[in-house]
Length: 131
Image 1 (cartoon, one colour):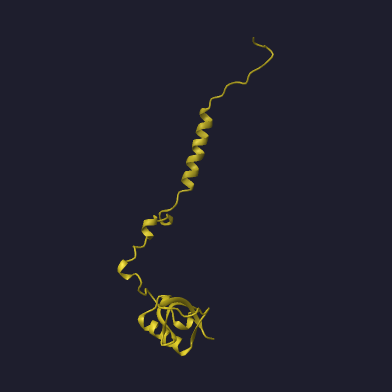
Image 2 (cartoon, rainbow, N blue to C red):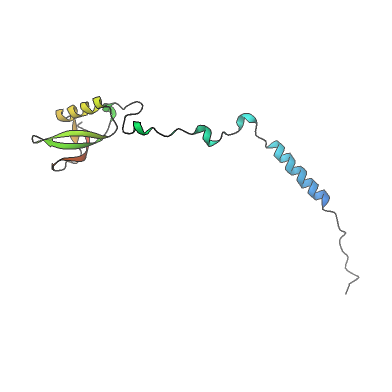
């Protein structure tokens, strides 16, 4: 059943609309092109090599001055009734700096942060400057 009173809209072709959208997209793509000098390098270009396993546990780069250290983690031990520094655990120091820490602890320049009762063998503890 067809009602003669209803008028239909004339059909238009979709081709002009598609061409307009395609032209707009092409214009945007051309305007957004990144110059060669501004393109990002791939992450591989900035990658660092893996650390050499032979250098683990050694001081790398510039060592911090002991006067700037606020605390250290050391392994303490008992020797003749006195508590002595056996090893500096953190930060990584050169052997000369470790010896300097041992002497400074023996002089009283560094103190135990939270003194634990001495035990057999060695134990880890934090030391801080005696200021």
